[in-house]
Every structure is written in structure tokens, then in C-alpha cells.
Image (tube, rainbow, N blue to C red; front, side, top):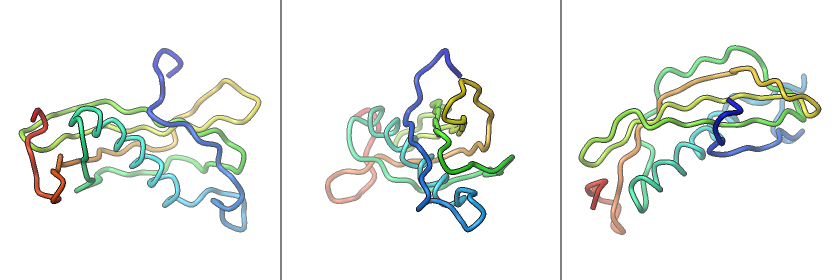
Amino acid sequence: MADRDPAIRVTAMPADANAYGDIFGGWLMSLMDSGAGLVAARRAKGRAVTVAMDGVEFHRPVKVGDEVSVYCTMQKVGRTSMVIATDAYPRERHSEEEQLVTSARFTFVAVDDGGKPRAVDA
């Protein structure tokens, strides 16, 4: 994925892990949601909220100290919604090699100040 910039990049810390040193899946899903949310907000030019997450599958553990990069691709833009393909790639601290750990599709809806759906291109 070195040919494009991640939406977000974070180092996994001990507070994010279980007793075996593996990062909690919920922490990783939260990071992916944050990355996709940044992409959605830029596309919507304002607030966008997560309404669904599909297809999450964990392929291998993420360890404390791994640098996790989240890459996002806009797949579909509807009137008020956006679907964003999101992939997480950890790499060891002293390595350049990234390996896909999980993928998911996030659906966001653009909302106004009152929390009501609004047109993405408004």
C-alpha cells in the first residue's frame, strides 16, 4: 500500500491489548471507523455518521507496538449515503512490510446540524 497515503495511522499500545499482547478487535474496528469517517466527512463536506459495517473478518492478530495503517476507498456515493471499503495493515515497528489484517465496508450518512440526513453533495 506504499503507493498511497493511509486515511489514519496509529501505533497499537499496551492499553489496547489483551493479556496475551494481541490487540482487541474492537480497538481495530474503532480505528477503521475513524479512518473511514475522515474520508466520509471530506466527501460530504461536513458531518457524516456510521450507519453500518459489513464483512469484518480478522486474518491475523495485531501486536502491541505494531503501526496500524487504515486505507479507505470510496466505493459508492448515493444521495445521502457513502460506502467506503476499509483495509487495515499492521507492520512491525522496525519493518516496511505490511500485511492485510482485516477489511470491512462502512456505510455513512451525511447529516445536518440537527442530525437529519442531508444530500452528500449539498
